[in-house]
Length: 82
Image 1: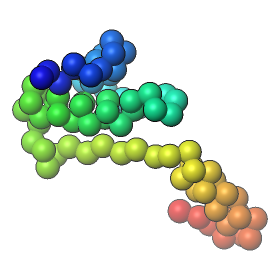
Image 2 (image 1 turned 45 degrees about the horizontal axis):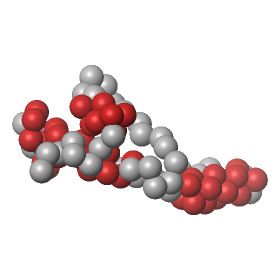
Image 3 (image 1 turned 90 degrees about the horizontal axis):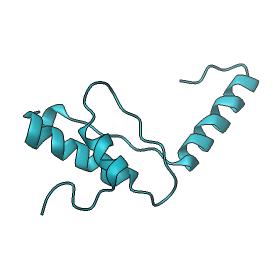
Image 4 (image 1 turned 90 degrees about the vertical axis):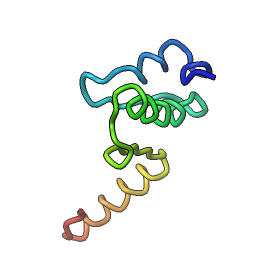
């Protein structure tokens, strides 16, 4: 089974993109996490990147909303939020 068997054309392009950092933004259930994990595998297998030198992050809308709400509360109370 190939790394690209379960990816559509846009996902394959995202996995193969290595010229710069890449942010994947798409709707729910569209395969964002699959793209990120496939990209890490691709970088390890095809580019020789060491696994311990790779990282992938995902964030949910709920986390963004919670962070934004907390930040606004902190600003309103005169506190800085990091």
